[in-house]
Length: 124
Image 1: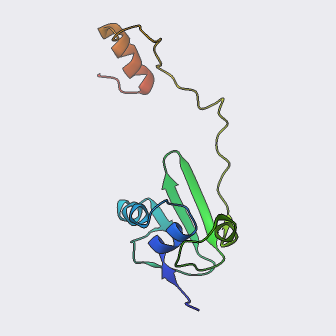
Image 2: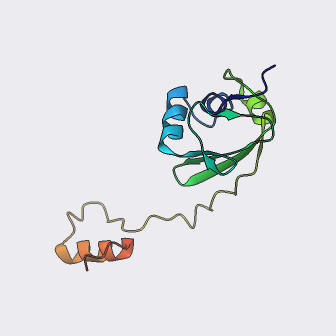
């Protein structure tokens, strides 16, 4: 069996990304790290490596236990790594702000300035 596998193939095989091309693009964009270092798509990952995947608001941290090159079923993929990810934030804390009532129309200039101020995009 191989002692190392390409990182883009591994994160796709363990179902951290839906497609191999998404995994490759994430590596190129710097969303994947191996042992704290930015990973290129062809960089090798071995057993014991820590792979950090940033996607959306969630960070997934996985310790490699098994090397996979082909996509496998969910139970086998779950056994291929140890998940060290922090728990996702509770849904109550992730409330949407700046949501307008349906049918309220476009915001006025004053409301736009208030929205920008809430989001931290002050014009001054």
